Length: 436
Ligand SMILES: Cc1cc2nc3c(=O)[nH]c(=O)nc-3n(C[C@H](O)[C@H](O)[C@H](O)COP(=O)(O)O)c2cc1C
Image (cartoon, rainbow, N blue to C red; front, side, top):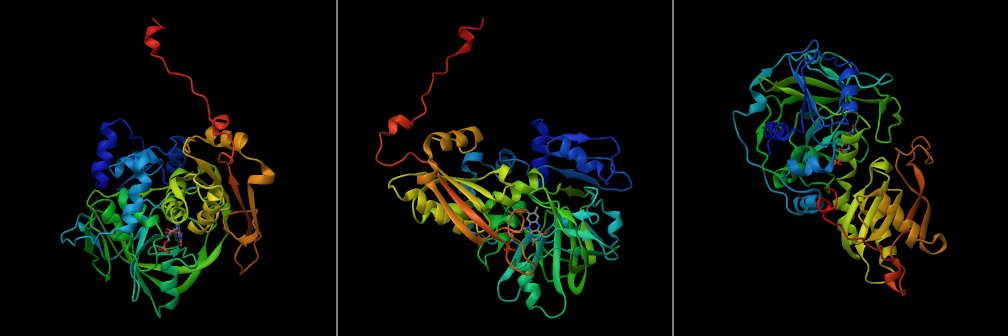
């Protein structure tokens, strides 16, 4: 569904808030979104700016699923299908995102948010960046941008991500277009990390029709329905980037990162700027959920995988749950190994069976309480490559973080009477018969 159609639908369903009171981009919008639990919201009156701001459209699985025309339960399989079968997008002219073309850009006209005291500066946090690699083709990925001037940002380009790899082998500047104000399909596709060479825009198009248009000043294609497109170049200059709050809600420190120079901004006539508050629900959903299909694919190679969840409590990055149909005693162990292959940054994974509701944290704890024995069902891998986002990992400058990984087999033990492990069920009655 197109972004604007989706916002209209959410409003009709009573799921969207409109804030008409004047609000500030400095902390206030971030704090309101936080207080609203990041429910979809439009800020109509932004102090000092001509544009409105919206946020919250990826803050939970139900909303994301609705935006992709599916349900929470079927979402994983929709992502798996799109990853397996990307579809080339069509190209269009006269795109909505180019209704206005600004060739002398001034970033101070765009309501870029200041999120938290202690941040390095104002940050674009929901921008999806598109580049072209001469060998690998198009790539779309999130890159946070810290505004450092009227037409400059520093861009956080993490090593081994395609943008960084392409930048590192480029002589001179690398063209990049950053889209702000995207449909759910674009947002989800940008957060997926398919194998190098697989075009995330074709994945977006497989999730939902996503026509593209040519940039005005760069040899790049962008989703035609975007609200804003920032066309520019990642230069060889570096400058200060950070501190910034990351997924674990702890501070990522200040670094030197490449300077992104903005050459042109295009936007819809009544463009809406997209907010995404760092470290919180939307950030977490978009980081963790796209790892579920890659874990699913790896686990499916070795056992019958039924579902996968990256949990919010683990920062939506470090903890996963894999639901399997256990056929052999060693299936959980195989699933643990495969799950770590499917998401290299995961630290702890739990294996459960189909009778456990993986979306219910109490049910997961119950499975550990009633099915797991530490001396029999715990798998420990010490000194593994780990996530830089985990403050408890072993961090040494210039080296990959090291961590201990743990797998918890909370499935029903083999060679026992399974009925002993089944949760008994009461029968739900029609209360109208009793409560008159
Ligand atoms: C909200 C959000 C912000 C992100 N910020 C960054 C970032 O600043 N820099 C970065 O390199 N990756 C960032 N990522 C992660 C990449 O988008 C993600 O890992 C992507 O899948 C990388 O795929 P690629 O290697 O194909 O480019 C962010 C992800 C999300 C969801």
